[in-house]
Image (cartoon, rainbow, N blue to C red):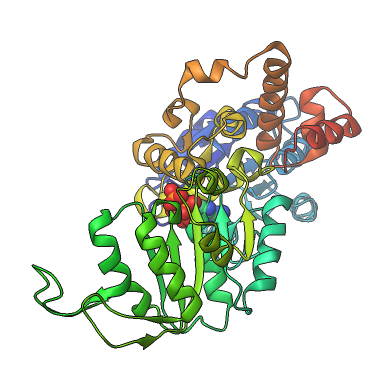
Length: 452
Ligand SMILES: Nc1ncnc2c1ncn2[C@@H]1O[C@H](COP(=O)(O)OP(=O)(O)OP(=O)(O)O)[C@@H](O)[C@H]1O
């Protein structure tokens, strides 16, 4: 957070004073405006954290009406802006009214540059503390996470988390079904972490990634000399997981011969290492996952039904990312914050059109695809906001959902996202910007599932 650019907007109609102030802030990126309109334009495009505002602006340079109008609009548009007003030569009254209207502080004219610097620096300091807090809140120690580590706001996923919570402390076996990258391993870990086995090991093994010939030894271990190359005794994953949870990923890839051995272990709860004669009692909770259709495999006699029933006392179908209402955008923001903090702190968010694309893309690779795309975009970004082209979503595929109705919807969403981000989530102002009533905007937000 320390490397962020410090943007300051000076609203001052006296060109001489404007110049003098501008050059006195070496550590800041300084923007100048001579009237209310210019000030608001800069506020929208540059989003400065601090504004110094001369209340005497044209067309009322000797009064304060225009200055107050500017103050009100600035705070409406970006309520977190720290506005420091210049009080006139004589009265403090205007300064006090400005403070009660939401200004952060004031300074007396004629300007004492050193004193003004102190006020501005203090405002920056406070603003960056606030931003840090907002950042930590967005990181989310909380409300959008289920099972400790799964970020979701979608009712479909919350229901799944509830099911998992309910079975966590029983010994029933759980089968997680879902496409690649839907978070099966994360859910298995979540289950382990809330169970009373949480202080014992969580051991994951991807049965599809290990050659058939090695899988048996990987699961059950072997004694020294059990086969050529077995130069020492190796403990298998099942044994390592003793007392804890064993996660068998891609369980559909286990060859039939090994399925028999796994079934025997699940029935008797003892193992023998390859080449060993000793029965070792094992107490593990088994959680499995697969993206394959096990019912079809059973019908084709590629998977044993008795093993299936042992492994799937409870089955949980995990929805694809596209079917989780609002989650793509929620996760995208989370990944952006995470990767920006790690790799490119100047990146602060998405352009509205990028959020539209994220919301509408079908995400065939689910959360993993989203995570990878955001990571890449954060690394490649030169700007503070990520645009849709950095997401590298295939334009041709995008055409698939661009029928007329979808195109209209997309345009609506785009405009709404933009208005909301410009007004920092202020619905009345966003409705004004869009030229529609507040209730109509609320209806549209509901219709398009847009969160503010
Ligand atoms: N709801 C979520 N919140 C935060 N991160 C998530 C979420 N779901 C998945 N992820 C992240 O997405 C990536 C893929 O998740 P995970 O490995 O659990 O998926 P999977 O279904 O097991 O994938 P595969 O079937 O390909 O093994 C991981 O980096 C994981 O941390």
